[in-house]
Length: 60
Image 1: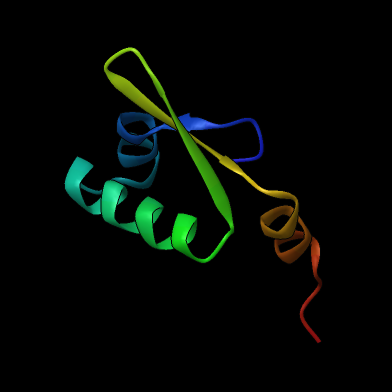
Image 2: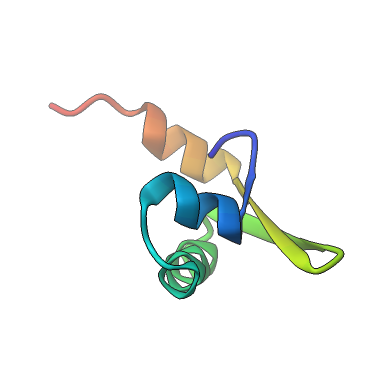
């Protein structure tokens, strides 16, 4: 998600409903891991620097 995805794009990519993708994006946004912005009727979500840092951490 580093390059950003619409809610519909997330839902399609993850094989979940749009409502589920929207709820997950909201939770990630509230945690400061993604930012969202409206693009016409669509909402685009993109990782924050913190979100990217967490994705880059290797499991111990």
